[in-house]
Length: 330
Image 1 (cartoon, rainbow, N blue to C red):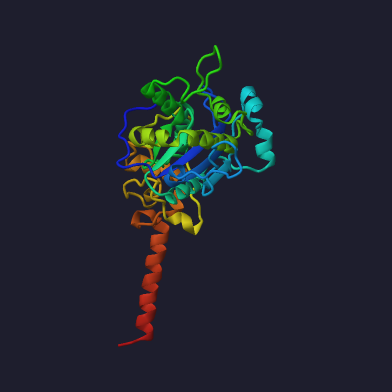
Image 2 (tube, one colour):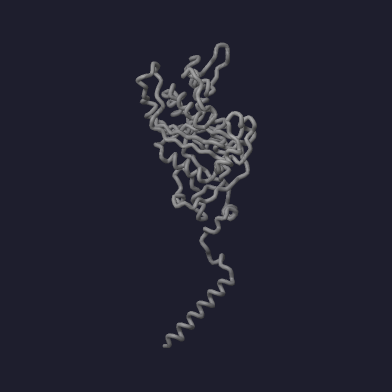
C-alpha cells in the first residue's frame, strides 16, 4: 500500500513508535480502538544504557520517552477474532464513556509530534500494510490532511531488507529448527530475550515490544530508515468509507493550528483551519461548511440581511434624523 517516495533530507532525529488495535482486519474496513505512540530520540539509541546487575549485555529501555496512549470508541462492532485477540469489546468502550475518533485526537497527535525534534519518523511493525493505511483512513474520514511532514518506516520491511543486504542467516529474523523464517514481533522478541513479551496485542504492550526489538539492531535500523523512510502522505488510504466531518472545538487553544496540520487556501474563514478534500471549489466548500453548522461563524454581508430588517433599520435611521432636527433647530 506504499508508493514512491523521497528519503529524509538528513538523518532522522526522532523515532515515534506506533501500534494500533482495531476492530478487525481488511477488508472489513476496521476502525481504530487503541492508539499508542512512544517518541524516542536518536541519542537514546546511539548511547544505550546497561544495567550493572545484568549478566547479559541487554540495553535498558530508554528512560526519556514521550508517550501518548488513547482509547477510541470505534463505533463499529469488533470481529470475533479481534475480540478474542485484543480482549476489547464494544460494551467496554460504551461503559467507560470513550469518545470516537474526532478532532480532539488530531489536536493531541499534532501537538505530540510538534514537541519532537525533526526529522520525525513514525515506526510500526507491518506499518505499510496495516497501521499507516488505517490511520490514513481515519484521518480521511475526519476530512483533515495531517502528518504530511512526517516520515514513516516499516520495521518488518526493514528487517527483511537488512537480512537480504547482509546475506546472513538468522541475524535479523527468528527461525526455529526446520521451520521458516519469522519476522513476527513476538518471535523476534523471543529470539533476543528468550521469553515472549507481556501484554501482546495491547497497543502500549506492542509498542514496548517493538522498541525492545529495535534496540537489538538500532544502528542498522536507523541507518536503513535514514535512506528508506517515506513521507506519510505517500501512504495509500486503507479504504474510503463514509466521511464524518470534524466538529470545531471551542477551546481557545484550538484557534491556532499546529504546524503539522496542513492548511488549505484562505477562502471562507474557517477553511484556514481545516483542509477539505482536493477538488472542492468555493461552492462545494460553502455547502460543506453549511452542513457542519459553521455558517454561524461566517461574517455577515449585505446580501445576508433580510429585507424586513433593512427596512426597519432605514425607518429607525430616518426617525433619528427627524428627531435630531426637531430638537436642534437652526
